[in-house]
Amino acid sequence: RFFALADAAGLSVDRISLAGADRNKTTWGQLSATLHVDLVPTIIVYRQGKELGRVVEYGRYGQFDREIGEIIQKGFQQ
Figure (cartoon, rainbow, N blue to C red):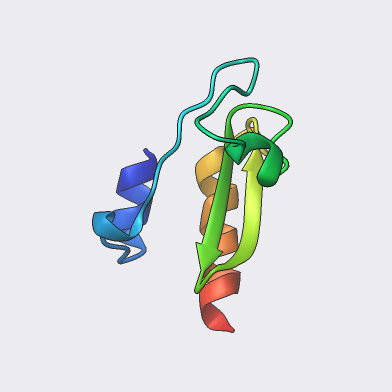
């Protein structure tokens, strides 16, 4: 669903980076700590190096795709 949403938003997959973390938030380097990831999954949306927003676990609505869509719409209208 995530990649379908990205495709619908016109985002190329070469502009998407994924980093996996386990339940202990173990990642390579200190990525989880640096990005302040306390719960998994956490999806962070950036544009030009600036964080536009993040969805933690299943988001406010219980539908991560809806919330990501809102973040993308808001962030790319600026």
